[in-house]
Amino acid sequence: MGKRSLVVLNKIDRYPPADVKAILSRLRQRLQGLVAAADVVAIAANPTAVILATGEQVQPQPQILPLLERMAAVLRAEGETLMADNILLQAQRLGEEARQLLGEQRQQQAETVGR
Image (tube, rainbow, N blue to C red; front, side, top):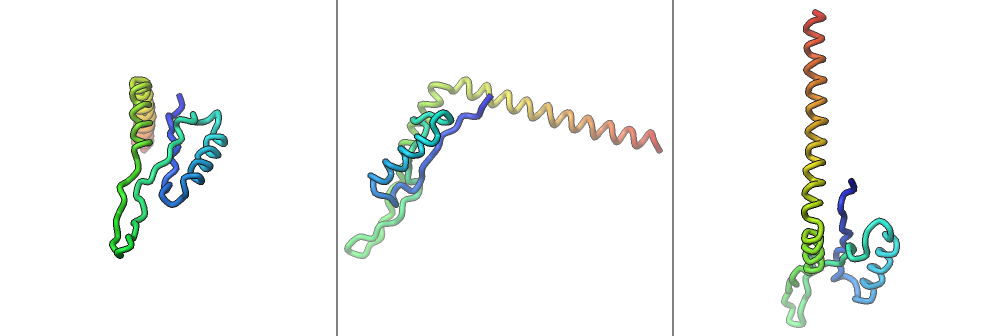
């Protein structure tokens, strides 16, 4: 059971569109076989403020739509599987915690008997 991953290239507002395209292409190429090409997306979560000719500083809106769209597509296609995997992981963690607590309790009981 592997964990579902998306790779997100942030701060695309700092690069020319041609560079963003080249970086995405390179990332997809390097991650081939590990992450689907569609799961590599580009965003600008907190774009750099722009200073207008008037001297006014304007904060552009975040460009996160590609990430939101991909997450929605993944959830539509794999939502039930992802939930089942998550429940299984939680159950495994609970089992490990229970084993650890039982071990600690047995150790305490053994120390009490040994006195």
